[in-house]
Amino acid sequence: MISIVKKDLTSFRQHLRKQDMGFYLGLFFIVLYYLRPQYIFSELLIIPWLQLTIVGGLLVLFSQGKINFNKEHFLVLLLGLLALASAFTSTYPQISFKNISTPFIFFAEVLFLSNCARTLNQLKLLLLVLFLCVFKMSFFGARVWASRGFGFAEWGIQGPPGFFQNSGEYTLLMAIIAVMSIPVIAAFKPQTKLYWILPVTAVMAAIGASSRGGQLALLVGLVYLLLAFKKLKPKNLIYILIVVGVIWALFPEKQLDRFRTAGDDKTSTTRLEYWSAGLDMMLENPFLGVGYETFPVYYDRYYKVHDGSFLSRRKEVAHNSLVEVGATIGFPALITYLLMHLAVFRKEKRPRKFGKKSVVQDDFVLMTEIALKASIITYFVGAMFMSVAFYPYIYHLLAISIIVKRLVREGGQPNIISGPKHG
Image 1 (tube, rainbow, N blue to C red):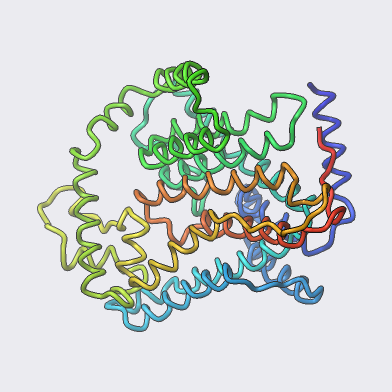
Image 2: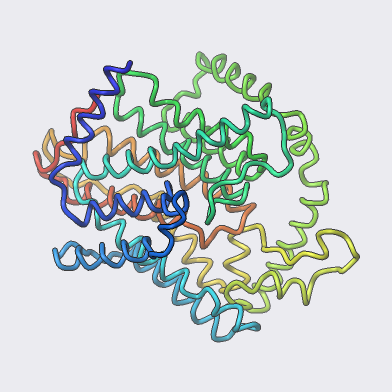
């Protein structure tokens, strides 16, 4: 096993050499975003590494003539412009304008990340670096859950500072990485089972993090993979039932109780109230909503019943991304947001003519398309219970899908791109 890993590391280093600067900056962006060395070594925080990497990367790509702007980029930009418009008409403009740069930062990230990788080898390297960085988080979560004796903790598992620090958002990231990594690892055809530790630890971390929405998203994503791989056959049902039984047995009893009481417990009923109020906000403000990021304060003022309970003393988000977007930015933004999901899920139309060695027929591309579909389904389910419309998940998935679609469009001729002979 060690010799195989050494061989794969050598292959990885070889393919990493002689890439262009724009791609190297893209990899550096992934490291900064998911490994977050600037938070491990806090003295590095004096420099805005992420912002400099994005700006520098875009400048390099522009100078190389490698910036393409397509309809997926337009959707992200449109969502940002609608958020900006809603800020001008917001009930609380000071709140809406406070973080109004966030949608446009995500637009810059998508534009940069989707254009930095332009070959099949670069797509493979990008995904490998992403998985290596996220493995630190998944291993941490699995270790924490194991240290608890695989028991339940009400506070779940916290991720690193930033977007994934909250237990719910951390669970959703683990769920997405689990379902994304399974087809991609299978596409590499590894000679050792060691690499499957990523999806295994990601699943363990998702279970240990105690977020029902994220765990349900993981389940739906895994079921989709079974359907995509056509594994839901009678002869395979016994194995699937065994795996489900093992996972069910590993689930902490208190977490199972939370699923049994879903819909009736205080958390569930309160969120139903949030969603009902959000739908009311949409109907009353259909075009631009009540204002970007104003759901908590708007709900608190016009809808909340102040009965002295713990939840009544907190200003909460919508806990549903569709409600969040529709209520705060309006129906046009909600449609745009849904179209972003479809853009990731949609498979690029194949060229009519392509050679036997075309990227169109490459197993890695086909498996990555399955991985993206499973990931966006997982995100969508999780987003039904979290306000994560302006979190990195969908934007980075969209960027990767743009890379894959470009490869398919430009890979109609033979011998344009050949993947690495990765063991």
